[in-house]
Length: 521
Image (cartoon, rainbow, N blue to C red; front, side):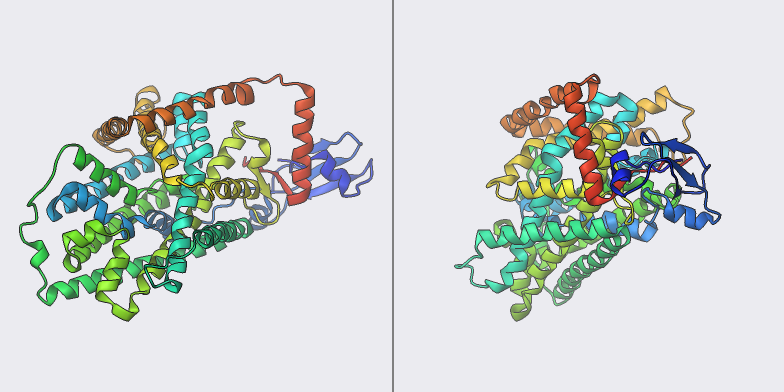
C-alpha cells in the first residue's frame, strides 16, 4: 500500500522531477504512484515484519487488558462518586433505597457494557456508538450522533470535568469557606489541564495510557482510604445512621431523578469502544476489560457510599456539594486536604481518558468522510491522531468561559441515552438482518432488549422532567440535517471551495507532518 503524501508536501521537501523515491512501508508490495512533476513514489517492502508494523503510518495496537480496564475505570471514576451521593440520597429519601439505586445503576451499566462488548467484537472499528449506528442505520443517523457530540457533548463534558479539577486543585490554598478561590483561576487551571493532557496524547499513546494507569490507581486508592476509614468508623460502634434503612423512601419521578445521578457516576463505561482498533487482541481484551472493571467499580461505589453513610448524617449528605470533602473535614481534621486533592487527581485522569477516547470519534468520522479529511490523518513519527486531538482540545477550550455549562449538558443528556440505546437497538437489528455475521461474543437476546427498553424509559422520563431543555436539544440536533446535506451528501461542490479545502489540508500536512492512515491489507 503506498504511503499517501500530498504532492505539495513532496515538492516542499526539495524533490527533483524524474526521480524515483523509496518510501519505507509496511512490508506490502512495491506498488508505484506517479506525481504530476514526474516523480515516482514507491513503497519498498521491509524484510522485518516487526519493523514493518512500526513503520506503518497508522494507529497501532498498544492497549492491553490492564490498560483497557484502567481506561474504563479511570473514565467512570471521575467526579461523580465524590460529588453526587448527596443528590441520590435526596431523591430517594432513605439510605436503603439509595443503595438500591447504586447497585441497580451498576448492573445497568454492566449490561450496557456487555452489549457494547458484543458490538465491539462484531464491528471491530473504533468510534463506539457512531460506528455501530452507521453499520446498522446508515450515514445520516450516524452523522447526527457525530454532530451532537462535536457541538456539545464532547467539549462540554471535557471542560466540565476540567473545571472540577481546577476548583479542587486550588481549594487547599483557599481553606476559608468565606474566601473561595477566584473563578478566573479555576478556569485557567482547567485550560492548562486540557492543554497539557492534549500534548501528552499527541506525543505518545503509551504515555497517555501510562498517565491513565497512574491516575486510575491513585483515584482507586483515594476511594479505598474512604472505604477503610468508614469501615473502621463502623467497627467503632457508629451504626446509628443504618437504623431503619428504608424509612421515608420516595418513589415515582424522584426515583427516576436518583437514577440519573447514579448513572451519571457510572457514565463513560463505553469509552474503551472508541479505541477498539488500538486494542491488542480485542476479541479477548475488550470483554475481559469490561468484565473486570464494571463489577469492580460497582463494588467500590457501594462500599464508598456505606462509608459516607457511616460518617455523615443524612442531612450532612444532602446539603453537601462535595460529599468526599465533607467526609474528609469531619474525619481527617488537619489532613482533610487529602480529599480535594484526591478529587483533583480523579478528574485529571478523567480528562485524560476523555482526550484519549473521544478524539477517536472525530478521527473515525473524518475517515468515513463525514468530517474534513485532515482530521483522519496521523502524525508520521508519533503515530497519534494529532489533528483530531488538537480539534478536541480547541472545542473544549471554547466552552471554558460559558457561564452555565451544566445547562448545555442538560440539553443533551437525553441525546446521550438515545444514541447509546440506538446503538444497542442496532445490535438487535443486525441479529435479524445479518444473522451469519461473525460474533465472537453473543449475549442472550433478552439483555439488549431490556437495555433498549431502559434507555427509552430514561429518554421519556428526561423529556417529562425537563421538556424545554429536551426541546432545545432536539432543535440543535436538527441543525445537523442541513450540515449533513451540504457537507457530506452534496458531492459536486464549487471548485473554489474544493481548492480552498485542499490548500488548507496541504498547509496543515506541512505544519504537523501528518498523512492519511495507511490501510492494512
